[in-house]
Length: 195
Ligand SMILES: Nc1ncnc2c1ncn2[C@@H]1O[C@H](COP(=O)(O)OP(=O)(O)O)[C@@H](O)[C@H]1O
Ligand SMILES: O=C(O)c1ccc[n+]([C@@H]2O[C@H](COP(=O)([O-])O)[C@@H](O)[C@H]2O)c1
Ligand SMILES: [Mg+2]
Image: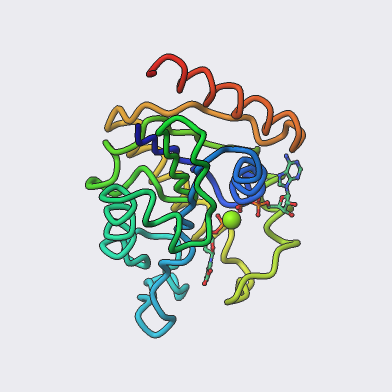
């Protein structure tokens, strides 16, 4: 069985942290990080607001991300080996792929491929505070959060909801451990229901 899990939601909701924790325990589990598909800086448009438009779908090479997902789908075993993931021979033939990123459910060709879509959120103040502590490959210029990051988050979330995309909301204010156990249990139950 092939099982694709989305760990999506807002920037600094805790997606990468949760994903790394799940990867340690889920058998035959590969990961694809959406952040690895940002286009080079010189291809990022500058908006009328003067900000580089990093937080829009067009700043990501989603075709390349989709091809990578398709490579996993056509042979999870081969994909795992190529990415240094050990395949347990004793495990039932279940292969899991985690897609992790902030715009997972806004790209049409991917949206129906998920078995389960999680969506992490924290309140605005917490998000802004966590973001101010982060250092990205391209540092945020002053005003980027309120001028670009937050409005784009709201826009894509509104669209996702208007399109009726079904997600499981996760409260990113819970502890790392609580989130890990909640999602692990939910994935295990969902896998049992499918087998
Ligand atoms: N459950 C949590 N509670 C408090 N802080 C968290 C939690 N999960 C992650 N963090 C912290 O928040 C920041 C963003 O986490 P990260 O996993 O990189 O988020 P994302 O990938 O969604 O941007 C990091 O400093 C991380 O240590
Ligand atoms: O990774 C990069 O090259 C990169 C370059 C510029 C900006 N980012 C930011 O990365 C954010 C998404 O990653 P994350 O972990 O915060 O969800 C997004 O809000 C972008 O503004 C990321
Ligand atoms: Mg991240």
